[in-house]
Length: 542
Image (tube, rainbow, N blue to C red):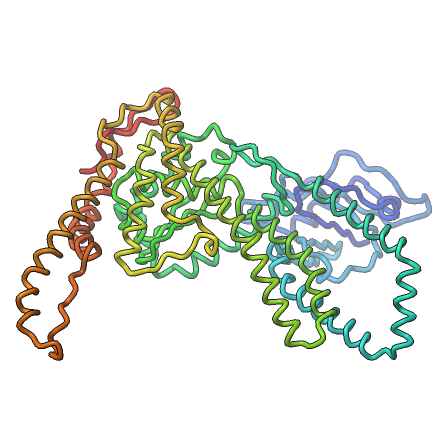
């Protein structure tokens, strides 16, 4: 008589079907222990204390319920926690191993054992499936709309008239069907409303946070592989600075469940790109170009708090949910465009116009809204960490001047996914007094009386005056020389001085060189714990 024991290693509990449980039989099988120990020498075996006969009396086959207690070498394979043993009667044909995604153990009374282990099938995250199906949906809508147009044009005029009359006779049925579809859509929206953390804003959330955690794990592995050769070692002072700031922000905002429950990890990439981002699973990716762009530890804290706000509030899941709904509704319009346009060229033009309208009316405004919210929440997280929140507006002023120095033309805000630097400065200036009070309520040390915003404005003013003086002196030197040249001379055109950009570039180059080497050295020994926040020293630059 063969013994068949299948150990399913899963954390979820489920009931067996009735047609299986009726054919099970459990009996005392201590006499089988010695045989099984010889079969699996590295596995400890013990049996249940009682057995019940669940089969008919005339049935001679029996099955022993066995529990496998893994040894040290097998604990990674056989997990005893929340596991269960499923028993099949003798004579049951062995199922195809390809059907099972869980480890299966077959035991035989003849001393032969068959061990088959297969890795569990991991389902793809729902957002990833949607990203794959998104272009396919558009293709189906285009084919459907074009097929309707071809079918309509192929009909003779009398049949087209019959189709119109048929639709008119059933107009109330079509209206009723449309109303039912609207009710279903409204129910879908109402059942997928969610409250945003921290701000309490009501939002539509089609994809859950768990789905995006799975997608973040896949995305994080991809980034780790992409930046594998550019990773800065953990012992590097720059990496330690970023890591300490992230730990400080997480510790001082641990009253927020979304912050406390995430395991934060820092990855510094050696690249001149001025960028930083944080995945929903807490993986922080910062580029060394961003470290060179910030002037002090307060600006670095504000940037990391801004990116942490994106992750904590689940902005990626929210934006993907809104995009999913908009794309679904746009499929109806896309089908109508390809069905009603007389030629394919006009349909392509209509599709392009539809895409741009969706971008400028829905996608980009919504993205700017989330960025503004991340600025506000990031300012709150930085204030609770006792950072100088006045450094936030200064950072965006620096970025605006940096873009001018590099000759980058500013894009109108309505064309961008982010607010303009100027509008960000205006919004943060409006919020600074509120979060200065929050910072003070956390028993943080007093800030210097000198406002960094005023210092930056005065520095820009001095540079502007110096630039005007340079332009005036250059004009005086070139004036006599211009009079002596003939109008047709090749040297009649006076060279234009560099202006503000040249002056700022010359002055900022030396400042950046010195600030990059010293501004990001964090004195970790001078943290003082206050009532609700860790105290930041008044001066952090060594």
